[in-house]
Length: 162
Image (cartoon, rainbow, N blue to C red):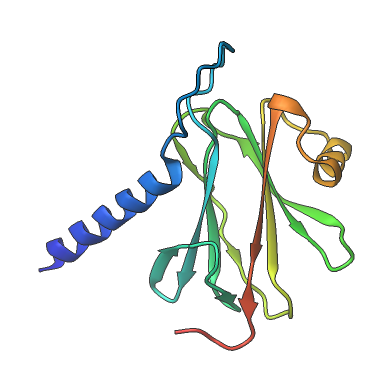
């Protein structure tokens, strides 16, 4: 019986991953590119003993643990930032990543009980970024093909969720 539940869960994860990572439409572009697909970010939410792939809408609550998965698609470095109350950013994590395949980032962050939504910004780049360039990227967007940025605005509720 436990095998059936595990197989069903695995099948659901594969289906969700396919939906998130499916390739875009084929175009008649004559440009040459070394990247086969688009980068992607997945957010896992651990609530108690249950782990869920965040659907982009479901709120988190204090005590939930958040963990990121990135598909770098040619990029080799990741930076994860959070936005403070004053609009400033703090670097939570920086590291090299494998340019192909999935990279589950080792740290998990616990959601605090402070009011307001959670904000995570994931930056993929081809080289490590200097602190001043990270600020410029966040304020002005990604400069060209060397950087990819994804902002996650994660709603948070103040009461505990089941």
